[in-house]
Image (cartoon, rainbow, N blue to C red; front, side, top):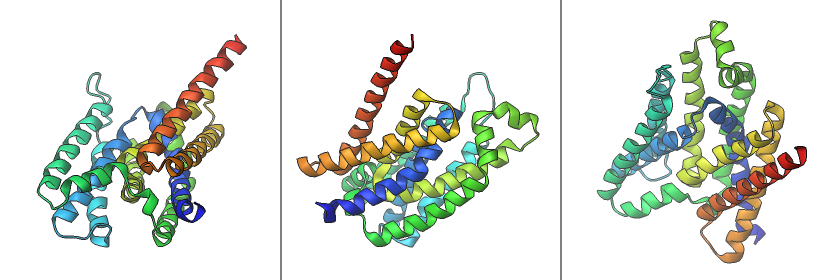
Length: 272
């Protein structure tokens, strides 16, 4: 069991390490589906690369996927308009729908298109290799350092946007950098975990954390702890039940979220 599941466990925890942190930004900004939209843009890029003749997982395919996510990053950085009716979430939803439709159209014209779409959705976490984990680790380390150095700017813009505006910061410029770094992360993770699991890594641990606190340090600790519990539990159930790893992990994250809601309700009643 350990020989089979250890690479998947290490890869999942590695993805969680950065996704849980960025999920806090996503929840605070109220752009819940930005990860889903950018992940789907990465999937569209991967599909376009395969359709163009690149081998799945190749450098060329990765670069095309990255270009697609960087395009989305640029678009999202200029759509925080402050319009009373047209919210940024609406733009994000439109991008997701169009990218999904384009992915299906391209896949329908490619050999094994249906299998390709399914793999993009559910990922291939169980078959991840140590060399790929090492490559992801190097890139994630670089992204982690960048976010650590820029944490004050990013956290202020996410948690206290009015303070950032009053300080005269270029919100669109900082958003462009934030989404560009976000796109690099998502392009790598979609190739391993798939769109659905990448979304779960990002959003669900952050939602759990915000149920209990609003302080950045504690938010991150709770997100990491709850996400790790879901990963270990999901992988164990997947192995014992011989079930698809990606969908089981998504359901495990949902189960941990449900337990968190129950715990929060219990603590609220005791406090009252």
